[in-house]
Image (cartoon, rainbow, N blue to C red):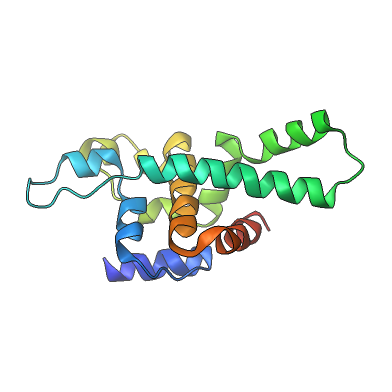
Length: 148
């Protein structure tokens, strides 16, 4: 698990203080559900919820600050293009994040590591984990780095 965490941290440019957040971020519900009662790790859906909100805020702030001449409607469309499932999955693929995700056997066999929805959700969960671990400023730095 430590190797997985180190690899993940290198890819997103952030070192977690709380290893439990990393485990939660990389754990898909299918993996968690297949574990024994003794080891039933939390899965990443709650962090995904948090990361979605953080991502929306960070991207909105960036666009508002850096595109002062654009209308609200145009800013909204650009933000939607940047944070949609397809765009987030492409970013996750560019960082090779699929290999860091803990999936259940069925999800693994059905190609879960390359599913757009899983990759996008995983990236949001990672952003949520960074926010929970390091706050908004660090999360904004990671988002800015990921989006290049």
